[in-house]
Each structure stands twice: as structure tokens, then as C-alpha cells.
Length: 383
Ligand SMILES: Nc1nc2c(ncn2[C@@H]2O[C@H](COP(=O)(O)OP(=O)(O)O)[C@@H](O)[C@H]2O)c(=O)[nH]1
Ligand SMILES: [Mg+2]
Image 1: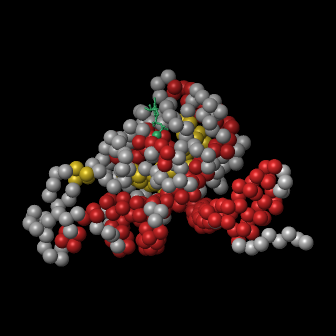
Image 2 (image 1 turned 90 degrees about the vertical axis):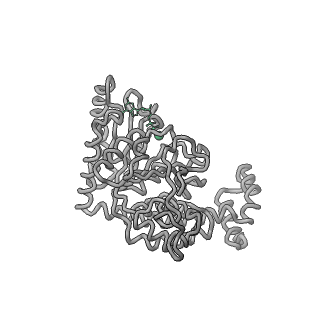
Image 3 (image 1 turned 60 degrees about the vertical axis):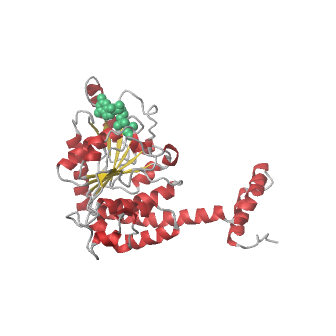
């Protein structure tokens, strides 16, 4: 046995000191420190169990038994873009699916600095103390550039990352939002199969990412600030319409009164908007991620929505629709990538685009021509 500390698998290769968790290497011989018995688990694994290839069964059993190392490796498998890995991942998922679904999935968004990380730390600690098992995931399509900074901001989640009931996973890197979405959705399922009953999905407001996260959660929470107009906060009405609750953070000290005033104003405005969830009234609340005030209340709100939509059938209906949407978004993603990678389309694009911009080819004809090239047919000219 060695005392050498190792970094857990979910820490990115270039992850810095913000990743505070270390794991201690386990016993490698027999548990008494003697060489492993032939045929024992340790002997089969050889001297470096972390390198051993896992079979589909290993993944499935490991995840279902809540083994953190295997959970992390399974998520890595799900996130892989290699064809062989994707095939194995799908096999693993097929076995895990019957064990998924038993969680509340909560999306969290808000502009940088609003306090998302601090809020997740506060709510997460609150939940872990109550014996919930919490997985924190992030959807950040820009993270291939920023290297997953969304969770790395000198972690505001220091306590949470040490809590045995919590599991924090940075955003998958991987280019398109479609790719990140697939990975995140599958990661949610893997975490549920591992017994996590609360899944928090954090996203920064980058373009489509809020809509994407809305499409994978049961409750969508928009964190807000006082003292800054909606425009300053970069919040569009469309995002407010996605939310099941507006939560004005930093309601502490001098700011508390202003936060309460803002809450009333938002509540008046919300009156005129259609709710994001059928039969639910979206309202504004205040909290302080710093003092913890209001954290228990927002958890009550989340549970109330869960209960009400469960009784009305809206919960199940939404989840079914989300799964169907997922099917078609994967089909679209696949077709789009095949189209743009098609050698004929690639060869023809510049010329067609030029003609369209120059006004010598109508957009409709251009689209037809490219599609016909893609489908391997000649353009029928109609004469
Ligand atoms: N006063 C006060 N400051 C907060 C609160 N929540 C977060 N902050 C501070 O706001 C800044 C941004 O918080 P952070 O959690 O990193 O925001 P994120 O970018 O949305 O993840 C940090 O300096 C936090 O300490 C709060 O409830 N009250
Ligand atoms: Mg943050």
C-alpha cells in the first residue's frame, strides 16, 4: 500500500489547485498486506487497477453499487468521442436505464458573478446534511476554450467537493452544444443509476445553453441580482419565461431591502407571463448564498413543484417529451454533421455561397443544390 495521494479521475488533466479532492490508493495486495491470492480481485487487476479495462458488466455493477471511481470512469466513457467507446457506453447505458429517473433534476443559470457556484455550495451542503445524494454537473459549450472554468473559479464549492454525499463533475468539453448536451443527458442517467437523488445542472447564459438545460431538467432556476437592470444582467425575457423560479441572490446586509423590493417588482411582472411549467406559478424569491438565508425556502419550492406536477401528471409528461426531444435532437445533430462533412458539399459550398451573396443564385436553389449533392443526386433543372 502506498500513501501517495492521487487526483480523482474527474479532475481535468490541466486542472489546477481548485480541485481539492484527492484519493488515496487502495490496498493492492491481499487486505493483510500479503501478496494477492491467485484469482482474487487484486490479482486479476494486476498492480495497477486503475489501468485495467473495464467490461460492460464492470461498469454496470460499479455504477449500481455506487463505486465513485467506476462512476467517474463510466462518465468518461460516456463523454468519449471514439466510436469504440461510444458503442460500449451505449451498451452500459442500456443496462443502467431501468435504474434511472429517481431524482429531481434542477437547472441553475444566471450571469457570471450572480453567485451560482456559491449558491450550489450552500444548497448542496444543506441537502447533503439531510442525507440527500447530490450530483453537480455543468453544461458549458464554451468550456473547451475556458477549460471548464465554470466550476473552477477557485472553487466556491470547497466544502461540497469534500462531502461524501456530493459528486461534482465539470462540463464535458467537446465542441458543439449538441455534443455537450448528449453527454450531459447521459451523465444525468449514469448519476441517477448510481443513486444520486438530486441532480444540479449549472450553466452560464451562453446563447442556446439555457434552452438546452431547460430541456433536461424538471425545475429551472434563474439566479438574479438587484441593483442591475435586466439589460445589464443580460437577461432576456425569453430566459425568464423558461424559469420555474427567479431567485434574487445576495439578499444580505445593505442589499436585503433592495432585494425584497425587486422581488415584489418581479412578481408583478411575472403575473403577465406564461408559466414555464403547466399549472405552476413562477414567482420571485430572495436568498443569500453567503448567510444561507432563504436556501431552505427555495428547496421547499422545488419540492412543491415536484409534488404538484407529480400529482397532475405534468412531471411524467414533461420527462417523456424531453426524452422524445432528445431522440430527434440527436438525429438532427447527426444529419447536420454528415451534411457539413460530406466531401461533395464541402467542395461545392464556397462557390454556392459566393453565388448567393452575389445575387446570381436564389437561396432556395442553393439549398436544393447542396442537398442534392449531399443525397448524391443530380439537380433536376425542371426543363
Ligand atoms: N454578499 C454576498 N455575496 C455573494 C453571495 N453569493 C455569492 N457572492 C459573491 O459573489 C461573487 C461571485 O460568486 P460566484 O459564486 O463565483 O458566482 P458565479 O460566477 O455565478 O458562479 C463572489 O465574490 C461571491 O463571494 C451572497 O449571497 N451574498
Ligand atoms: Mg461559478
